[in-house]
Image (cartoon, rainbow, N blue to C red; front, side, top):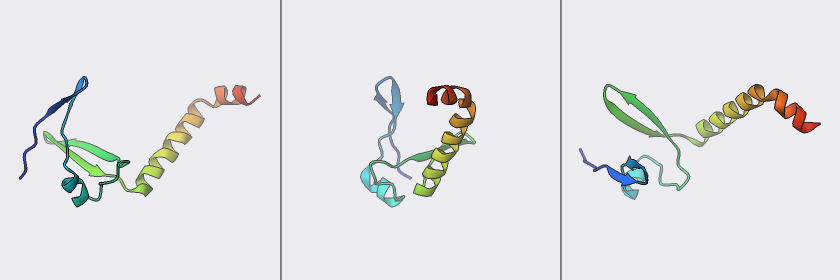
Length: 77
């Protein structure tokens, strides 16, 4: 097991992941997006696939379109 220290990043704290660790999980891309789960006192990160990212964007766009339908209709007039 590798241990990593928490570091201050602005007003937050974070863990810096080395490039080699990111490469091991296929997330060495600068645009990698991670799913974060908290279970039994553990923080788990998993890189999302491009397909998962696209699906999340589609769902968000549908929600915005539905929730803001009245405003979007007025803007289109």
